[in-house]
Image 1: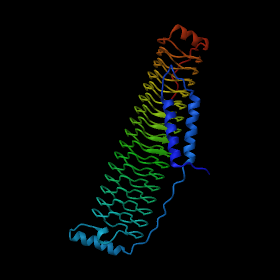
Image 2 (image 1 turned 30 degrees about the vertical axis):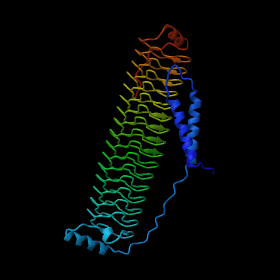
Image 3 (image 1 turned 45 degrees about the horizontal axis):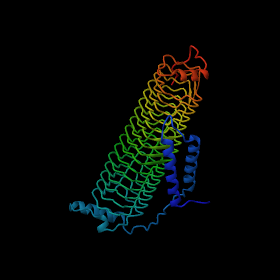
Image 4 (image 1 turned 180 degrees about the vertical axis):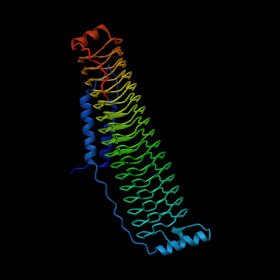
Length: 438
């Protein structure tokens, strides 16, 4: 199979950025670009990049079992503590501690730079405040291990069993947790900047208040995990399953989210500013007061969600689905909402001013007091909805069709635009404009 080299991929990435810039450039009156062509080109580029990605090379663990024994190590630990002298295991005994059963031993405060624990059994060990930078824990069995306050920078935990392990307040920049099992692990107020969590399992884990800036969570699983108040800016979240994750007030600005499932998650007051979200599932989320401003969100699902007071200003939400969602007081000002689906949703007092709503689908939608001023509604279809008291100053209505919709006491609609709309519309029945069930 033909694969692109790194320079080709970089070239494609720059093309994608250029295309995205065209999508993101919003002007309700001078939109000259053909939206469908832009979207098709963007999809083609994304497809090329995805198909060109080679499978990750799995690093084989070549372990030469340590010549040390558990008895020797345990005796050394006891001796150093009795003498109240520093525990410098790698200096005094060597770095190779691999392939041993060291379960239950106390390594707290130990100096273990570049220690090799690969394939070792470390269940219930205590590494609190230990110095473990560049250490090797690949394939280690380390359930319930305590790493609190340890220094773990550049340590390698690939494929390690770390169920219920504790990482509170650790310093673990650029560590590797590739394919690690972190189920029910805890790591509050920790530093995981630039860390690799690709294909890791973090179900039911709690990493609240921790910093994961620029980390990679591609293909990871974090079902019912907690990242409350965590910093997750600039992370990669591709093909991940993060259903029912609690991200309360977390920072996910500048993130790249692709084909990821965040359904049923808590996203209250989350910062998604300047993020790229492609073909992802955010259905049934609690996203009140979240901020997606200046983001590029393509073909993603937000249906059946609570998005009251959420900010989407100057975002691109092309082909996104918001059906059966609550969007009261939401702010979409200046956004590209081409081919968006807002059917069966509630948008009381929402701001959609200066937006592009070309070919939008608005069916049985409650939009009382919505601000649509200076928006482009060309080709939009509005059926059985409520636009009472809506602000319609300067809207563009070429090809707009409104059927069975209540438009009582709308503001700012010129006689010319009113005639154009009514020509393509039918009178609203008495039942039109009811608040849809959410």
